[in-house]
Length: 194
Image 1: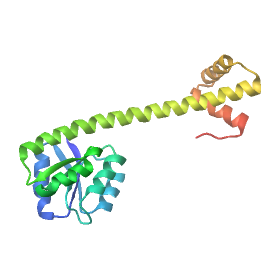
Image 2 (image 1 turned 180 degrees about the vertical axis):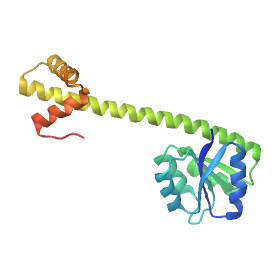
Image 3 (image 1 turned 90 degrees about the horizontal axis):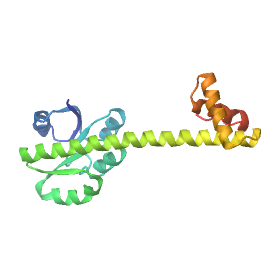
Image 4 (image 1 turned 120 degrees about the horizontal axis):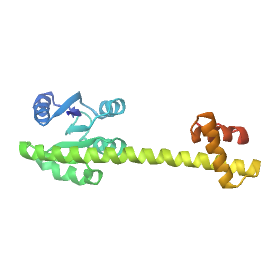
């Protein structure tokens, strides 16, 4: 399976070389842009597995963009930097999981780092997905608990009876407990929950 990649490079002469290196390693360049805002726009509109920044880009050294993408998305981020600047850039971005590759690029090192970035990106995407699922579950539990509280308050039910009431309503009406809880909140508190 190809890895969908955004390439950020101001030097058009480098684009084909970098594309070829990426394609040799099953990375498909889905888009090429030259500046920070275009990269952010593309990253917001399209899900990329990886972003490769050929530093410097049109409007910066790419550090701010790399940090922004690594914190706001689940993509892996690589900066290609001149050998004399790679260590300095690496210090700025290392806490964000951004990988810095010195130029000129050593093909074997690049291949190994692509593997590391791919593995880290997949792991992070999985953790992020699980985090979203847990947040959704927690929010659902909060809504159901508020509905139980309202039933206890307005119908003088015990917590156990309120819980059973919600379950029975869900079964009888063929709705989820969350949908029943939202109806209860709307009925007893006048609040609409989305």
